[in-house]
Image (cartoon, rainbow, N blue to C red; front, top):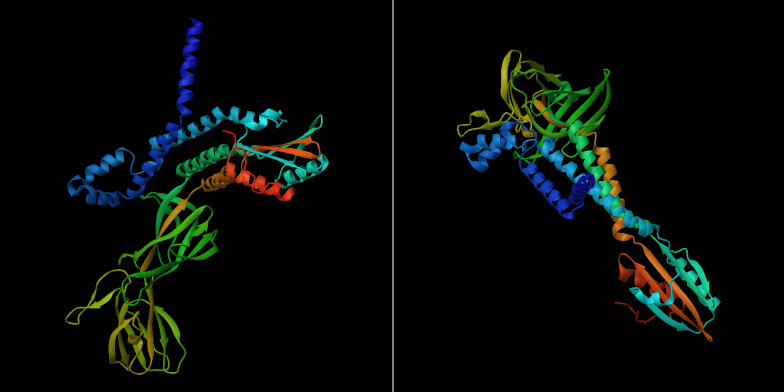
Length: 487
């Protein structure tokens, strides 16, 4: 009865082992992960609900959008990379790779550890690569040239003499048979790095107005995440194509502050993030600070006639003087995006600074001289009737920069896995386990040469290389020789 229970246990273990060593399981798991990743690309992960509800509205209509969102959330599709089932897939595929490797390792180890030995003469006919040739030369000459040819092929040959016959044999690249295990190991390392990143990493955002400082970033749900340092937006600027409203580029000037000291300054763009202490800050968006929160300053470059340009800053409603003149200007209004209707009445068509302008009244001695809009993107509006120039540079503090904030502690592990995979793939595709035997037999004043060779990859290339090297060693005697290939 005890033996029966042991047999049953053995059978169950064998079934589980066989299940995890199945190539079909690996294919199914990889396909499942690939499909999940596609879904995760379409559905924005760990984002604000309104974004995905908008997506589901397009896909299923307004009536079904809320229901579709709730269903997707219950299935873990909104934050799938932190879901139990996705992590279970990663564990399963790691187990599959590890158990497959362990299951096949003893057989490969036997092949790797098996020493190369001299062959019996009949065994030369069993190899896929075989060449025969009889040359008029002495045995010592043939031996010397054979040793030189094998060394040129990268072998460290061994010599065995049986009677008058000499057999020279060697092998190399036996450890390349472990390349597939390096690849398996690298995949497990990459998956481990991904799990570390998903478990202990951070992905969030930070809305930072010009001049403002923050010591925290925010999750998609709005929760604070301490940075361990502070980051300040010193300035933000956007450029457009020509006079259009299509952004050409936008940049943020950031400072990292730690212990009250500025330790790093960097200008970031869409493809040039700031990295500090494991956090990466990506330029992702921009916008206007709400009017109630904005503490903006109009920045002007003032150039009097034949005078030096002077930069000043002031809030809307304040006045400024043009040096060496009696003119005083007062900023009456600001528009982030000035336009005129068909009746030539000004209006603002967006809150973003697509076409910033200020309305200024100029006075001299208490008398109004002239007034008008000074538009940042139209330099001709900066020129005053008296020859002075007032350039609108910026409304600093009006805009914010939107930063995507990420921290991935598993990224170095992933990089290590990628390095191992590169090494493994190189060994698997470009290196091979090669063996060669050369039998020298004296026949009167001649020497009969038999070559047998084997490689586990790229047989044609190896055969061509053997032929070329032996041609060089034996003065082209192998040229035009048709190899005898056993079936």
